[in-house]
Length: 491
Image 1 (tube, rainbow, N blue to C red):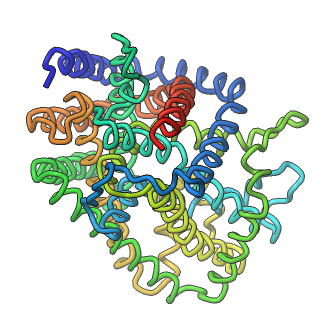
Image 2 (image 1 turned 180 degrees about the horizontal axis):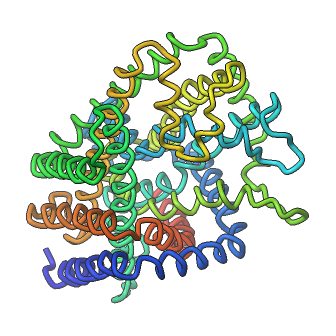
């Protein structure tokens, strides 16, 4: 272990992360304004780059999977898969599925139903409902996983087939040339992960504590936020100490079993035939319009829908790709490239579409046929939409409690995975990073979250982390170039 290189990444990352957290608290208003303006400028000027790049990622992965290179194994001539296929899928699903989809699986179709993707489309119509499902599938489908799949595949190949460190910087070096400054990419990956996970944790804490407050009738919201954050902190620290093979592994299985159980219950107790037909129609529309949606810009209109939704999502998933991709690479030794692509790109996308299909179409059915008021609620508090939908179903209290537990497990799994990844990056790519680093990063994430919850600044730092997607996009394209070159040499 090169301690000098480790400290070059670990100490600066730790110091800068603390400075960012404190800055987000002290200068929350200024950071919110500045980062919001910069994000708007970046989206307007480079939205086309995000759309084109993520589309390229999708095509690249598909071509690699079906090509002759698809038979190559991540691990050389004697591949031994560390996890069976079901455990592997559960782990990558739990890490990437996340809290956002639990809420937006209901809220997003309603958003698109009342604010359609096209200016000339009337809201709250059958056409708007159909496009709402189509674009919800699109926003959470294959493209959502593409950047992380590319990063994960390339890191895994260099790590297991060329014995390099599990770092982004390692994929951009060759045997003949090494840059002394590539470690800066690892620092950026750590900072984006810390800020992104801390802000997502904060938003999740707000959502869980708000609903817990309603269920219990206790009015002290700040108390619920502190309790929720504290319980999540102790849970993921125990899991972090247990290690990836015990903590994250079993948490992931619990997450996915809970998710599937809840989804099946809604399918059976809700408008079953309507849900099935909506899913089939939505998938047909999604694949039929795949290319058009992938490259959709608005040069002749002022429609800002794509910038608010698709481009924002693509920037967010690119910003998260170092974290999610590094973790996926860690658990994917022994998979063929074809198996990796289909497992990481298509299975999670299908599960996400099924979740949105079941939850979102149930919400649309209620609002379209029963005027349940979800359209009005989603504009006020989008996170409450799923719980309001439960009020029209059998046993709403049980469903709400089950969803809160599901959110809790997803948060613990995501933060635990992030803690492992930043520890690995700050420990020179070690697959067994030092325990003190895992504990330090775990504590820092919660401290950052608590500071931002107490003093504001969640949305400002979230926007700042998404802005980092612009240079990361170019870095991923360079990684692809190096990967293709190396594949041709090795085949």
